Image 1 (spheres, rainbow, N blue to C red):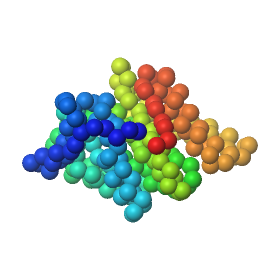
Image 2: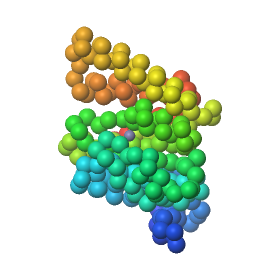
Image 3: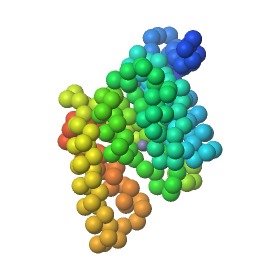
Amino acid sequence: MAATGGHWIKSAKGSLDFRPAGGQPQRERITEFAAHDAALIEGTRRHGKEMGYIIFADGTVSKEVTGGQSSISTAKLRQVTGLQSTEGGVFTHTHPAHKEVPSTLSPADIAFAAYHNLAEIRAVALTASGKVKIYSMKRGPKGWPSPSEIKYDHKHFTRQLNARARAVGMGDAEWYKAHEVYWQEYAKAWGLTYEEHWQ
Ligand SMILES: [Zn+2]
């Protein structure tokens, strides 16, 4: 991702506001947000914990939140979002490196996006050797499937995948890749936009 032109302004309330060079904040440019992603990656590399931040619908950015090794609790998130609505916002968080293969968005991530009616959820996934892959799911014209539907469908998929893995044997790379393909198909079926790219 190219660095975006502009600068950050610390607001009176302590949040960071991004001002693109020569214009008002724009959603497309804000979601690129490479500078902040880099800080998040740094932190996650250092302590191995998930980190995240929310870009609210009005373009302001929350403080960073640090979670556990595989999740960020809702209570911790509430500490940084306060009473501000997360509807229409963009939540970005890291997936710490567990293996050489990066892990895509989890069903809990997508269900979280649906529950809060976010515009987008992003995961910045690290690999053991330090590579970074960005995953993103954006809300579709018809919104999100329900959180329970998202979790139910994914559970069904995982059960089938694991059965196949036991039957024919499956390496990490193939198992993780299957999850990426699952979201690609899921996005198509529900009119969502799923993207992934190596940084
Ligand atoms: Zn996640």
